[in-house]
Length: 230
Ligand SMILES: *[C@@H]1O[C@H](CO)[C@@H](O)[C@H](O)[C@H]1NC(C)=O
Ligand SMILES: *[C@@H]1O[C@H](CO)[C@@H](O)[C@H](O)[C@H]1NC(C)=O
Image (cartoon, rainbow, N blue to C red):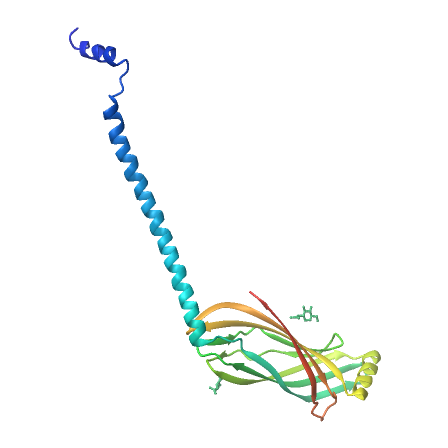
């Protein structure tokens, strides 16, 4: 029985500790750490290579797309305005209005289409008073397409003596300023793939030479302010 613990006591006396000798302690640990580290390096290296290639590819695609397809923003132009109704009701100082506004939408792109969404709005104002309102047609405008949208806008509004006087003055000077406010939710379609929906706000300040029923007004000037919300 006393012979069994003997060698253990001898070992600890010889080395002063139970740790293995240096060559046994270091070699396996060193190899283990080295392979772990190189696996990690390899992974990070691959990741950066992949990222770099992806960026190069995307940049190449964007450049190719830009050169080949030359993307351009669609253009919109108010072509004409027809006054269907513009009748003051003397009894309650209100006015019934119906305008038909023709807007020419031109999409010059080869690979980009535009979807016009349903919840749009078009409002015609004169000195901050709403005359009439309506919507844009909801449709898909394909590649290289020009469409004339006919917007049928109707409304009934308060029309006090102050506004009547201002309008009479504008009529006499042949410059009637009106504001057409448009809110249009649109989705850009790239190669038949719909991208995100964006909302386009347009303020179109028009100056007309007259504003009376049964007379087609001429457009003296137009100015567009456009804001896009993502
Ligand atoms: C343009 O698009 C509209 C709506 O999709 C379509 O009705 C019209 O025929 C197209 N015009 C041309 C020239 O392709
Ligand atoms: C349009 O005009 C209204 C005021 O009538 C203003 O609040 C709005 O920011 C304008 N929008 C754009 C796109 O200029």
